[in-house]
Image (cartoon, rainbow, N blue to C red; front, side, top):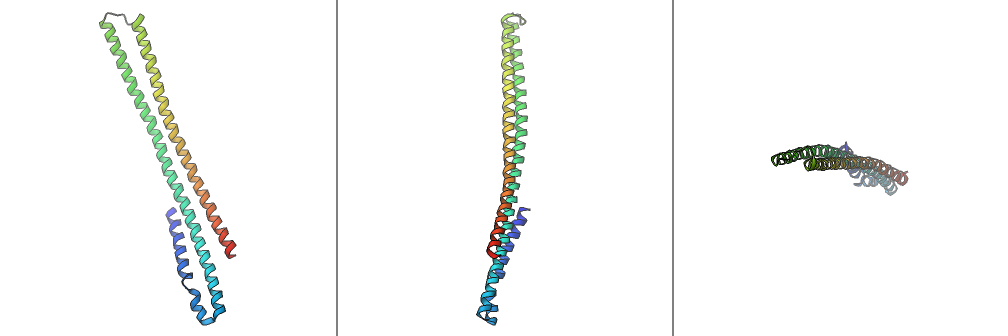
Length: 186
């Protein structure tokens, strides 16, 4: 869609310049005299100005559409990145959980091999400390993944807002071009 507006705008500008900017009044002026030549040239310049203004307005809209499409693409990428952060956080938490389970098992085997009762005293304190550390680290891992995902989603929302702003700015710019052309040519 953006390429259509850009192409049409460029084509209108080129066609206007070709048709009305290459001495269209000169041939008519030779036959009708100097006054007729000036009037025809003036009309040609006004028509050229209008054609160039229409082309510029269309190109401005095309640029806005292109910027909006780019922002949407980048926002989609940011949202995909957010989903990947959540999945990576879950995988890290799963790996940590497995490591802590293996650590606790190794501690129990060592304590039993040394003839300690793992249900009371120091072995139980070691197991509790290991569990608390594991819980804290797993919680931190999950929260970090959620923060990274939230940051990516926020970036995506910001990009979408930028895209909408590009469309509004392009429309305003096209309207200003039209208003300027109207004020100049009447």
